[in-house]
Length: 59
Image (cartoon, rainbow, N blue to C red; front, side, top):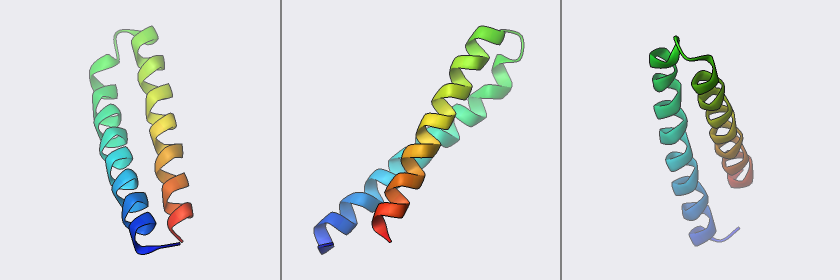
C-alpha cells in the first residue's frame, strides 16, 4: 500500500470512529423511544464495522 493510500485509510477510520462515538453517545438519549434507539444501534454497528474495516485495510 502506498503512503497516500495509508493516509486515506487512517483518515477514513478516524472519521468513522468519530461517527460511531457520536451515535453511541446519542443512544442514552433515546431510551424512551425504542424505534429511534434501534435505528441508532444500527448506525452505531455500521460505523463500527466501517472503522474496523479501514483499520484492517491499513495493516
